[in-house]
Structure formats: structure tokens, C-alpha cells
Length: 101
Image (cartoon, rainbow, N blue to C red; front, side, top):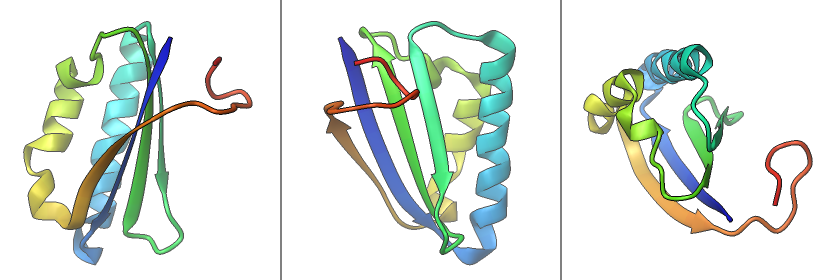
């Protein structure tokens, strides 16, 4: 069964580019390590300061929390934020090339 979590937050305008850089480092580490059981997407919205992360996990394994790049992303996250983070569990209703439900 696939477990999905959606996290949304808004950074300060000054921190948006740094936040994106840190997110990109997470994806670089994911590409290098290729962990199983995780599909993950991050979107930067048109306002330039809002971000949405969607993680799909197979099983109970929390791959992201163990990544050094993700730990660095989270380390000073609160100092970059204007609003959030708001995390919500979600159920996959449909998917096209993102996750197999």
C-alpha cells in the first residue's frame, strides 16, 4: 500500500532561492543513492515563495529523514519560513506516471 504525505509552506522572499537550492541537494542525494520505496516531488508555485512537497512511501520506511541532505534542508527551515509547514496525510485517488496505486 502506498502512503502519501503532502507538505505545503511559504518561505520569505529572501529565503526562497536558498530553500530551492537545499531541496535540489536532496534530489541530488536521492539520485546518487536511489533508495527503494520512495517517490517524491517538490513544486515551487508561481508566487515564487510557496513550495509543495509530495512524498509517496511504500511501507513504513522513512527514507528522507535519514538523508544528510534532507537533514540539512530541515536544519534551519523555520528561519526560512513565513507560513507552515502544513503536513497532511493523503490517499492516492488517481495517478498518471507519478505513483502506482
